[in-house]
Image 1 (cartoon, one colour):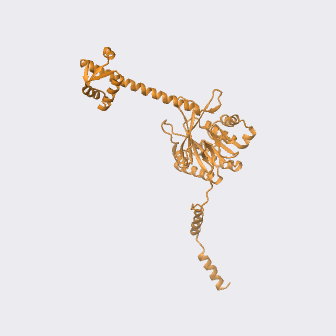
Image 2 (cartoon, helix red, strand yellow):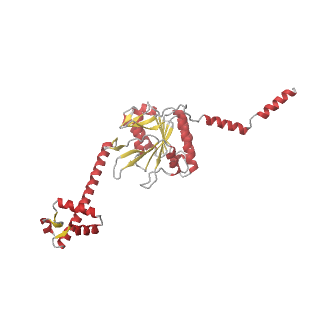
Image 3 (cartoon, one colour):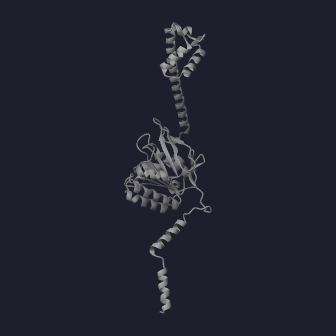
Length: 365
């Protein structure tokens, strides 16, 4: 080998990038694929469902469904499944054409999980063959948490769904309060949803306190931060109506919708029932306010009549105003309006700035 050839080999070896430099270049190239510029073409967002033409559960993203225990989360999901299977169910409509849906239940026993399938068939009237072809449901509560993520990946590879529902995402981690595990799981779910362009819907309970609607633990915090849409199921106290509302959304918020079980145990639309219940509650509240106001006015009028009686049957408006303002701890203007109203109602009358009781009320006192 000539001296020149040896020099070329040595020079090439010296100029070769180090392992560190090569890794930096690989990272630089990977980041370049993620840059978003004015010329970047972005695939339009495709909602998996719509309610009153407002889209939700977009493909390529993760989403949340939350609520207290036994508040109707699985029932609401059955309505969503029926919409995906037949095109619409009540006001919920599919945004996809004949989608495949993978449903993983990590909490219920097999007989209850079976009801998901049978109820969807009953609600839609579709053949069992069609539903089984487009909806795969798995009862996984006996699976160890360490297996569930790989189980999901395998089922997605085989079935290639457009929607994945995980009813009980908390079972995918050893502890929902482990921040590291929560971050890692949500990251994995995001990657799966983006790579496979599917909608990942994760069901998680909210905290136990009645007024706390946050999803549990670090897992709930991470899911809320990353989710494109978070829906919440609620039951009004003492009511059988389940209401589904949008608590968080990156874009338009889904309008509320309500469902319930009828006397035959079938899931039915309850929007009208809830509207009537709301109107009745408003009417009851208005009546209570009116009754309370009437009682307050009666108390003030009774005291004013006592003052008139104790003053010999008449009292100056100025003096009565001062007495009532002090007694009921209100502004003089409030008392003045009260006295004017009572005079107009002929409960009192005024002559030369002296207040008298009407004949009937004077006799009563």
